[in-house]
View 1 (spheres, rainbow, N blue to C red):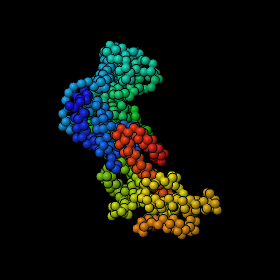
View 2 (spheres, rainbow, N blue to C red):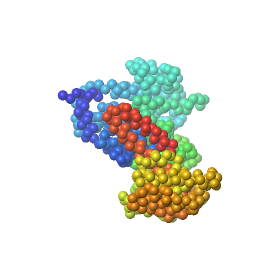
View 3 (cartoon, one colour):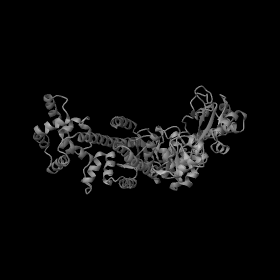
View 4 (cartoon, one colour):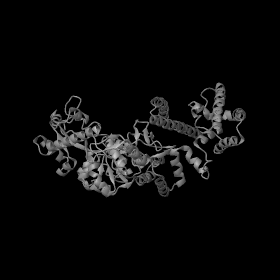
Amino acid sequence: MALPVVYSSSIMATKEQIQEVKARINIVDVVSRYVRLRPAGKSFSGLCPFHNEKTPSFFVNPQLGIFKCFGCGEAGDVITFLQKIERISFFEALQKLAKEAGVELTGSFDDKQAKNINKARELLKKVALLYNKLLVKHEVGRQALEYAQKRGLAHNIIRTFLVGYAPKEKHLVQNFAQKLGYTQDVVRLVGLVNDKGWDKFYDRLIFPIFDASGNVVGFSGRVIAKDDYRAKYLNSPESPVFKKRFILYGLYQAKQDILREKLAVIVEGQMDVIASFKAGVKIAVAPLGTGLTTTQLTLLRRYTENVAFAFDNDEAGQKSLYRAVPLALEAGLNVYVIKYPKEFKDVDELVSQNPSLWQNAVVNKQEFFKSQLIRLKDILEYGSYSEFESKLAQVLDILKHASPIKVESVLKMYADALDIPADTLREALENQNKAFVGSLEKENSEKSEDSITPYDYFLGMLLAFPVLATLLLDKIEDFEECFEAAYYKVLSSIRDFVSEIAQLIKSRFGPDISLEKLNEIFSSKFDQEFKLNVLEPLKLDPATMTVILHLGFVFKGKSTTLTPDIIVEFKDVYKRVRILCLSDKVGKLQEKIAVAELKGDEAEATRLAKELQVYLERLKQIS
């Protein structure tokens, strides 16, 4: 008889039922609802939804049915993924997936972890109601209420956002919780007490923070008095129920309107959200004092595919915009920007003076790349060409995060509007991504399996200008697994021969000889020796030798002189090949670790993890 595994006060499941759920559910399908995944060998990779990162370290293996982030360490199967991403108990995640898989769960028992979380949520909701009551119905909150109303917080706003007041009492919440039967551990668990043992929120206007389901998960408190020199805002610390990267302020209040309007407006702060709501634009949300995360954008995508950014008008706000747009594009969202007069520093100030301006600004939102095109045209007419080039490079750097269809659409629009050939823009875009990709694809578009790889291009540059080998910083051995055996032999031979000859030339002409001059001497004096001493002794088969020599001829056909531009390009290609090679090693190690963990071989997993850390550190240094 199958032994029961307990998960809930109402239902339990057998191990066989859990295995059946995991067998019927494709983990890649579930994770793809929250993370943009791309093939990576036998696995899939993407940006981790559990921490901020720029380089993907999150992997999903469909064969093993597991996920693993090598950045933050989060790992598990499809059930634990859903549990972590939606901040629900193990059983709630299991129940959702069982329903999707058509597996019936039976039995009953108790889930202690879920009960503790439920207690925390209950307490937070009751404290929020207490703060609200003190603001709107108690004498102790009279001055705070007057302040709130002066800031434009009418009764309907206070009610909708459950705004409250934390009075000048050090143990109000603790005593309140004790009377209701909550332990001090629960009070501390959700950050309602500070290090001194006092209530964390003291003489502040309180804005409860809701998750998307309407649970109070924390608070944000604002000072009231002008002469109060404490921090203007104080937020709850992160807790089992409050993770900033999962929360967007105002989403619970706005989600139905977002669904109806098919648009979400992302502003910088909670007062901007409330101000927008006052002006009748009830689709605004904001991150909680941190940069916007991929997880938050993925959460928004449940309600709409369209987001419009309305960050502050200052320099910091604009920097935030250019950091956020690539994340939104990666999340598969259509991106717009909302422009409002520069004399208003933020949405809150704009609404306080002229709500209709904000309403009109939202209606007249601009698609992001169209708004950047307008700016580019202005620069062409009134600015300098260097400024235009810089701005175009910035826009193309963002465009590379968009879908292929979006990329082609924008390139065509820019080509027509700026009178620049689409191929030129496409080449510039590809150079933003990988310097070698554009050149190779253009010359080898008819090829498939035979097309030149990044490693080929790297080797081709070295064959054309062997002195570039003096720039190789890593041990050549690091490339052994990345190159085909014959190519690695050539690479190693080039490095050894050039190092020896370079020392000889420098001993005569001085150690500070330029790379261009070094190449000139090498080409005139040692070119024949290079062929005799590097290529011929390798005894490569004729087909391989033909291909290798062709690589050098193809590249040298573009330029017979080693120029500063070629040196810069080689450094860039060399960096990218190093990253590509190390990334390949990291991917293989990650898969080995996942297998070791699945087998329960902790010693092997630990050994591999240490080896992995070395490569990750090197990747970090290169990047």
